[in-house]
Image (cartoon, rainbow, N blue to C red; front, side):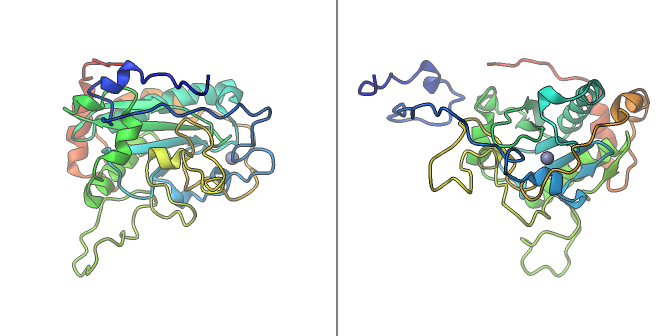
Length: 301
Ligand SMILES: [Zn+2]
């Protein structure tokens, strides 16, 4: 059994598979009888619950959206979180309904960005018990990025520019704010005297996380859990956002009151055409309109 590892599957030959060369299948560890607690579970603190709104690019009454700490390979990687400390299957109906609305809204906002062909929506949940949905934008034309390896490519591709990244964040935040809530990401400001422009302008909230560093989907996803890194790789699936999660006891585990999303869904469709939120550049309008024409779904994989 363990002496004869299975041969590598066919997908390693797919154009979308990021690696080539002599590949081997890892040996799996023995399954553990009891899984360790995730963040926000057992005695582990929940960073999401303790993260201030400033760590997010947009916040609403019951939902918050945040980005990685810095640009990554994909045009946009965002995480949608509930304020309440709940996992997916535990959402009450109102929040569950809002999750649908927020998912659609966020997908559309990201899809409207320049150069974005598709938005992959994922929920892994192996790293944190606090619900968080991943939204990964696939660059237009990059057919090799289609499908399930997109999260890997995020760490492989060269990061997009800081300016573009911030502009994208501001665009999405402004879009969401059209339906309510508060946009916290602002477009990049020109730093006239910036010796080292690597220092992020104190505008966006996305990079304010003082804690861990969320470098990419995979890293953030707990592929390499900071704490347990020394021991052994934990969950396989991409997981946790490293940054915002991990800090304090979940106190907001309250129950959601009213669905903010569904209620505004109607208005959303009307106003969605012309975002005029602070920070929304002119292009926002064009992009929004462009989004009106849904691109074709030629999902592979
Ligand atoms: Zn929490």
